[in-house]
Length: 252
Image 1 (spheres, one colour):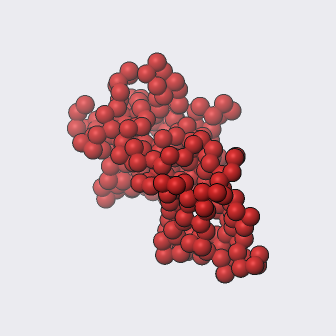
Image 2: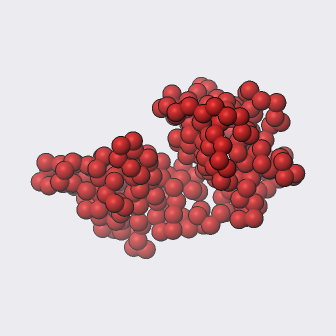
Image 3: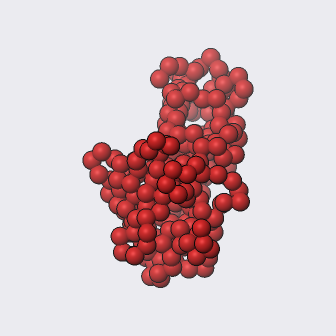
């Protein structure tokens, strides 16, 4: 792979200037598109090596991140069977800003899932991505089954694994004698010993909620700087107050 091709692929379309502010996505990106992907040739297995970080991208619900840059989703339009999506992107990287429209196609092959990326407004060849399932973060995934749920009567947690690196979480907690609550749901990324939910909240800051899974399957939550609390909890409630003993694990 040439250096020029690596650069074009890594920044998702090159640097055509003229960025505008990102808007709320019009549709939810299907879950099979989420996770860590690496550029491959047809039938090739991704190395997922740190040495190939410049040809990888990580896809979140609201953005993609790649080597020395990121793109926010301005809009997402998925087809009925959720295997294709047209995405509009607002990107920045290496000191430049640009907009792009791309067609993403998720398909199964004999060697596994593939994500095909085509540019709608540019004359670039299709780029093929394969999922990285053996990267360091995925290897650190806690031993949580496809459906893990906790409920202690005041608080509840649902973790639904989407891939080796991502899970859908739903947190609900009633605190301060029922007067104040915390409620949050979304996609979390695997981290060493648990899951991490992150979200940039306008006017509030970076919400980072860590859901830590103990070896005994107990759960505790860490809300860095209490930014998630400020947006998702009442005045006398906090995520840091939420803990689950192993005995509170329930069937989903």
